[in-house]
Length: 514
Ligand code: GLU
Image (cartoon, rainbow, N blue to C red; front, top):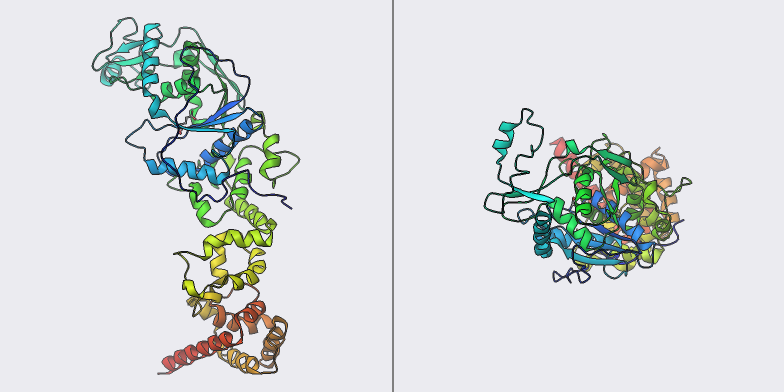
């Protein structure tokens, strides 16, 4: 039993997104220190593609922590500095997808969205300040020169310009001066202490020759400015973390709590990939997954509420989430399990809510029937039968299309299977004459009895006897309970469809005989 739906707000997911976003207003200036008393997490996606389920999981973990404190906040920061790869529609997709999951501006724990590109001045200023303090130096080495000097091409930059005191100028990148000594110890809430020897961290570039900052710097400056207390993100960023921790320290701040989430893998235990796997959250939305089922399932990728509990609504799950309890080993994205979850969530909806959720799938441009032939009352009558059998909402249409199409769909495979010689035609003729009996009350119960009788006379059990009737009337071998369907469709249409199927069989036989 699932007592309630959704993690919060924005369930429709169809909200239009305004592109005029407010800017960050709380902006303590570097290098001022701010003492935080509450949790400020952030979700910092780069809008370079469809919103990934892994991103959705990171957002939810951050969101859970932010919601645990009255003053807790999750900042949404769109890292849009890579102009060549960003597109506004990806940004809108992220905001829409988050709203679908229940994360958005109508919740006081949400802050943003902020756009990294609007803080470019701050990034440049910070780069200059790091230079002035001696924490960074200009370097004019080309990649080729560095490679020539190094025997091992895999070793990074050799520190050639460390003491050359170059001023800023064309062709000169700014490198961070990694302190002697070390190691840098990243205290990761999920992985424990991870040590990085300084000898293995090159003096990394923080700003290009044109002054534009690299991810590693911009990301830290924004986290500092936005007073982020917890950085919870994908494991692929763990290798950036010692560099970023050094930057936090050079800027005079205590680094945030770090937590790197395990990778998400497919059935073959390979990291989910855009090319191979269905990773876009939107695909799941389009297939008719309910956001509350999706939220529930995503929360279990690397974490569990304990006591073998799995199906649990957000309101119960959110207070239990602890980042320390996230597992460091990879998490398997099991679509079958997600489907099963979704089926359970569908069945837990009230009848009315179910009908409401089905609406987008039954109206609009993509439905296979003429709009005028759709009858919401007929759907409402059949809805309980549908609700008990679908796992995703997109399965509704093939279950009910026979009710609204002028003719049932033509599915050759179903037809050939049900209309075998010696069974199909005889059974349809028998059914047609039984169904024509004016004494037959048109109820599921009597229709079943009539079909059973007609079949028995031909030596067919009910299962075999009803197959041709089902295909003649609905077009398919599987679907809703047949006799309830016949009752709903009405005597006239059922008879007409059986007659049409007989005609088609006759034409087939004539064709075969000719
Ligand atoms: N923008 C980065 C990404 O999408 C995330 C950086 C972070 O979370 O620190 O991978």
